[in-house]
Length: 109
Image (cartoon, rainbow, N blue to C red; front, side, top):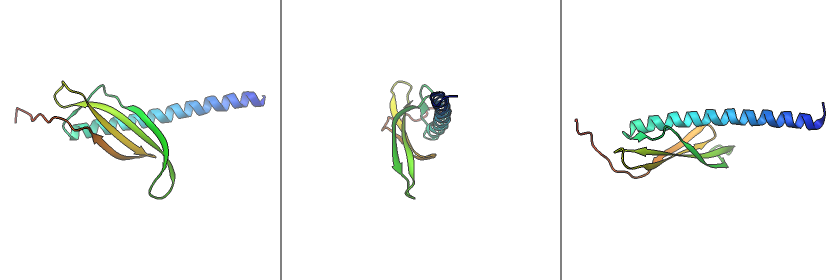
């Protein structure tokens, strides 16, 4: 086995690990966004979140962590789309923000 072959095996293994880890994080963020939307009485659209930022930042203990920004769409009326944002630092959700939106009270109450 040559050094070049070992390099390609390592690279493929790393890419597979990264894909598996990124998918697990995205699934966690989708679940969190869905729960937050339910709590705020809005509807998560497309059942999807989109990674729109990736960086390195330090947490409160000074440890270097991966910072991620995910975006998602939600609605209150079914007609207008609004933007939501999930910020993660490491494995922790730092905050979830919803764009200012129109509130439609439930007519059945």
